[in-house]
Image (tube, rainbow, N blue to C red; front, side, top):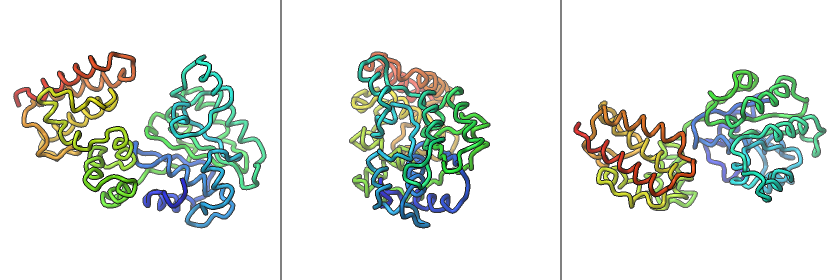
Length: 333
């Protein structure tokens, strides 16, 4: 990602953080606000051969090395599933184990990867511009992994900087949080977020629907738009659930379905309390549903969320979720 593609609210935050002094930053906020993008923008600027107050130049050998994920002075710590999704190379041993089907890609940051990162921090910089360690999502460190990082955060080598990006910073050890400069991610203005989404290729109408579906979080909106092509499916969802119509969800994963139903339940309860809905337009919501039944539905969805990635029969699970939604939305107000 070059500086030219960084969203304007990310660029502004990057510039502000680059003016600060320190060795470790914690970027915190809900998903979809650009924690990874901001972390990468900081790393690029720290390692750039010709940085400015605005960040990295985007043209030097260091910036190119980051673009192709081969920079010798950058260590990226992520769950293996996230590294594969974002195109970062795994260690030779990890890739070999996964290719040979000895194990699946890890959804946590493995302690052996953290130990490699600690050893990396002790080495001399290859390009003479210092070194950087990027951890994302930082909440995917378990206690053992976090403790392996802790001592290096307490007594860092002189030329290494850390940036931890998290979508659930409250899950991090207090000792990790206390050793970092904290930064709360900025929510972009709606107009800026819509303009950015349209620049990524979304039509104006789809951008508006997807941004609302994501609760105002632009990167979540973009990700959702890529997996759910039809924006009108979101608009139709509430009343389709009230009818028990499964077809609107035919291309959605179980995790996307549960998330969408959570949002629908939230907006229905908000309406019952006299508040404005957040994820849907008022006119698109059904009129029924009692507070007691909707509250029970919200609890049931939370229980389902804990096991949604288990290998259940997707079709049967979808039918059960829609049946549950239909009963809740048609209960007497």
